[in-house]
Length: 199
Image (cartoon, rainbow, N blue to C red; front, side, top):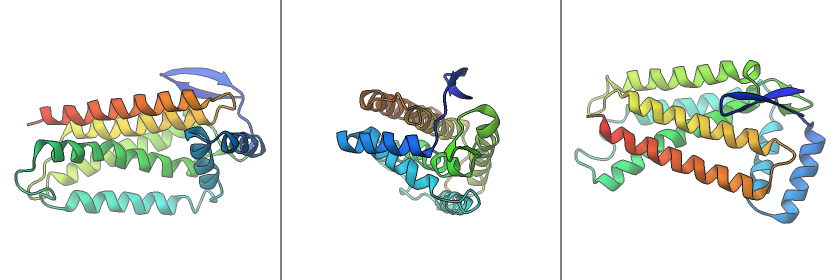
């Protein structure tokens, strides 16, 4: 048994092995839908050895650093719509980073354990890197450091963890994953909107 993070609370759920996830993924494929797609992506990521899984995660961190090094990538006075989508890139970037970090975590029967002991260090690392990236931007011409941008990064990480934890539950449904994805997109849009408050 392992603990899965559920809105800050710890709830006991059975963690099944890769074989069960493959059966669940096969059933989802037969039905189609977002749940099947996400489970197939999860199984693909789990094929990586834990040591090798650090490589794409570190490469993505390097790409984030490079993008943050660009001076005024949208021009000196971007349209508000374009600026909003640029702000929405924050939760996207760190959502993808979180997804890439998951296969580096300890596994039980070949699958990720969604508990604080397993993922706590990775959550700390992602949030620390988000802070370092914001600090780095304060030295880039035309950019600035923002706590609200850091919160948008954290929101992307949180939403990715919530969806990933849900699809690992054998009792997950297609409707449930769609609801969580839409809710995650909504929260990320709110976080991106808040970054406009930082003057």
